[in-house]
Length: 100
Image (tube, rainbow, N blue to C red; front, top):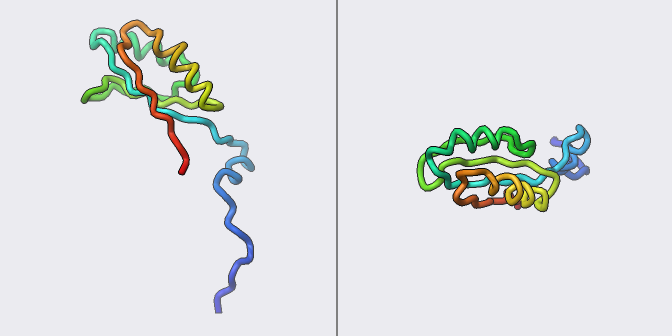
């Protein structure tokens, strides 16, 4: 006969807290750029602390950036202050990661 556990499952967010990992805000930034400026843009992106990865892609966007920050407000500040100001960035579309 199987024993049934009376305890509820522990949410993943609680497990992360126990090992010192917080739930940070994350986003993808889809960049349209001047093609000749892509190497310069990548170099500048590599200097931004919140940028965890930046990849050149094919299609309507030229670069996809993955950001991580303490909250959505910091994501917004990084996009406006740091990414939009890079020479050669024509447009940056921010896609916040949501938890459902």
